[in-house]
Image 1 (cartoon, rainbow, N blue to C red):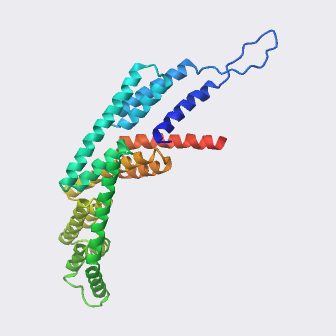
Image 2 (image 1 turned 90 degrees about the vertical axis):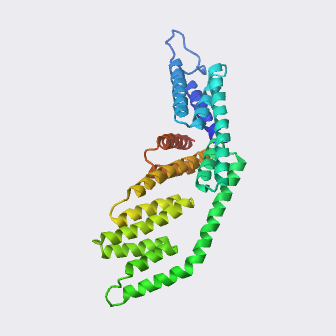
Image 3 (image 1 turned 45 degrees about the vertical axis):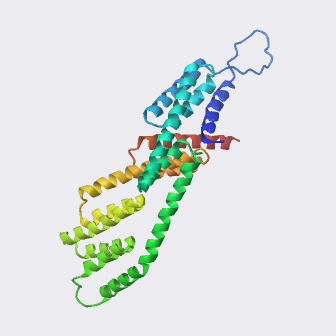
Length: 327
């Protein structure tokens, strides 16, 4: 059962459960024989339920969450199958999804042809968020990830020997009782440029801790780390790039305006990424979707779509747990 059918089933199940509540029996002069009655749900409860789904459908459409809008209109058409307005709205949402899928897929193909893998990856993720069964987008996304991994592994293998030599030399100088080497910072910067970002940041932080008042040196250290952050970002390694930009600001003692701008952009992009990945998962694995959306909120707590989806998913999870406990 996919996520949309599951949510529709839950909604109709709620109506069915409310229909099973027995109505109060008026007192009678004669003994009443036991009768099993299945009264329809109160009109006010039904109207409130319908109004709630109309509101959620419109809100989702306005926020650009076409998949959620389609879900709510589908629930409404199942509740009132003769309502032409609901059917028209459902078909409108589906047509908007099909149009968005075509546009985003073409944008992804064009970006990939132009060498912009980051933009292509975002567009393919958007396609899959709207249509998880889109085989071409899924295949292209896997190819992009495999190519990025191959490039990363090749870079590491090529630089491993040089990094080991530089780190060994730096540690030997640090352990020597002689006065501090005037080229110490240069050597630590070289570690960062050689490719091992973690070792480079570690060595530069040790230098900054020993020379907190050297503003020029700290700025050079932060700039070197920011350069590695830009390199990671160009390869689609967003979380790594975000961490490096933040480390650059700490090393320099203050964030440069362009670093701060990249941090904000990356946080928003990562929030959108985890939102899309959660949308792919929630139809089959609600727990995994919640974990993706929780990760997205940590990066971009102001993302309204993430917050709304996370709240709704947690409520659905709680309801399922209660149903399971009663069984």
